[in-house]
Image 1 (cartoon, rainbow, N blue to C red):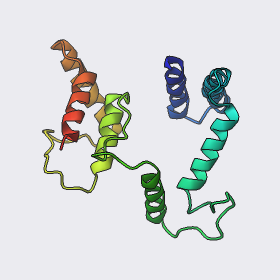
Image 2 (spheres, one colour):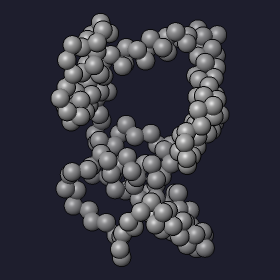
Image 3 (cartoon, rainbow, N blue to C red):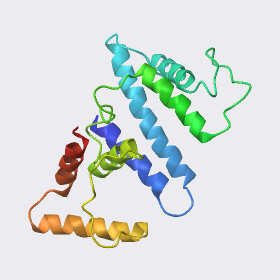
Length: 181
């Protein structure tokens, strides 16, 4: 599993690199991720689990099921598409909710292994627009650019290290506490 995660981060590095997208590097990293999918599928097929074809069919069925605004149940394209992004998002979320009913909270389906900043962002995305009654502890002027935000985050990590604190664990703990009802 560690190799799959590493390859996914290498793919992200190529996609997020400054300047024009390096198509050859992208092709190579997509191939490395696909290699991991193929390897895990092959290992499963050798133990009687599933095949790569099963993985592809599962993906095809999920795309059709979750995107009824694009596909008919038989997989052919719809004649008309929704007028707005909001309508598409509602349709997608409704299909996903039927397929994966949420547990007790909107946070139940968040992967526990997400990096803390991603976990925090996804958590806030899920409560966006809700009055959760919890005020931010942020003080001073908020950063106005990604560069300013990056410097602020780096300073926080530096200050945490100087105190022997683990910024990743601290943020993950704060997010989990925020998620509690």
